Every structure is written in structure tokens, then in C-alpha cells.
Image (cartoon, rainbow, N blue to C red; front, side, top):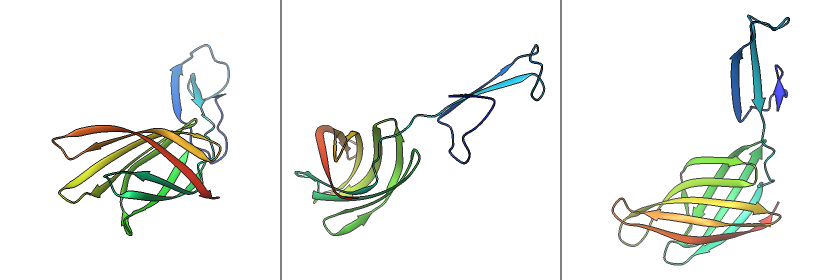
Length: 141
């Protein structure tokens, strides 16, 4: 957390600005408080199995501070990851994959502990929604 100062190019997770007319320094009597949450290291290649939903998933994760860049492949196909983020030790992503019948949206939430991620995946086709336990193992850094 900082008061009226940042941490270089590391973007804050939360920011609060408040009027402080009695403040003797700074711009216009405004105080800024910023919060940074130090994330777990999620960078590397991860693998997980999701029975009935693509079986073997492979995640390639690049990380800069709390921002994740994720490349994902399942059944030999690359998938688009629309939403991704990381807060403290929790990470989340939302790729879309197809089963044998219809496209499914997958929302992964997990907690990184060393070379393991555990959490849950919510799978939805727009009409049906299921939640499964989810685990992944880091195969390389």
C-alpha cells in the first residue's frame, strides 16, 4: 500500500482518492492511497484433465506482476481466453471450448501453491451449468 506514490510501472490493484484540504503538500488537497497485492508465481506450462470437457488441457502462462497472458490448448486446438486475472494467490480465466454437442464456456478459479493449482471450474452452455473440482500441475517454468 502506498500514500501518494506508486511502484514504478507496476499497476495498482485498487486506488482511493480523497479530499484532504488540510494537506500541506501535494496537488489540490487530494490524497491518493493505492494497494498492490503480491501475486503467486503462476508463470510456466500447466496441465490438467477435465473428464468430459476436453480431457487434457495445456496452459502456457506468462506473468508480469498481477497480469497474466494465457495461451490454452485442448484436444490439439488453441482456444481464446477472454478473461484472465490474478489476485494474491488466486487466478481465474474464462476460455470457450467445444464438446461433442455444443460450445461450452469454462470459468476457472484456482489457488496457486508451488507447482499445483486447485480450485473449481464452472462449465456452461448457456442453458446448463455445472461446477467441477479442478486441479493443474506445472510441467515447466
